[in-house]
Length: 200
Image (cartoon, rainbow, N blue to C red):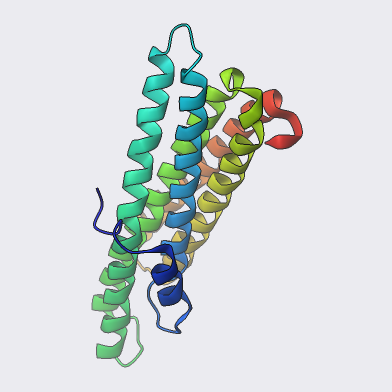
């Protein structure tokens, strides 16, 4: 279980609101992705209870659980990484010197990983959509909405970091992957939409 798990939702949201730089948007989108993954696991297990052959559903539920664990750990990772950026900027008088840029490169990893996980969650949601129970259609629709929002927020956070990074190769590589994640997420949403209609 990730180290963030013992913290209550109330405590996390209080820290989010208290005016300090961390946690911030990156941690918030990771939390959103975690909720989406949990919902995908839930609707999958509801379907599993009446499935004739549940092997694929078990795989989907376990994959969703892994995504949830991943993004929960990213909540702390994001806060710690951006905290290092803040400290580097204090040391440079607010200038993006080499130390601050290096910290910003490290801080780009958590939102990129959140975007990757969110894309996976959307794929899992699309995979399970055809076999879910009717009573959970709206739950899966919420999961898709949350995962899409998490991916969008993670991409925004990562790209904001890229605007201050002078390593052109790094920027190009990350930006290309972000674009691919967004395109893949749109495809997954369309697959789910075809099954769920207005609830997706």
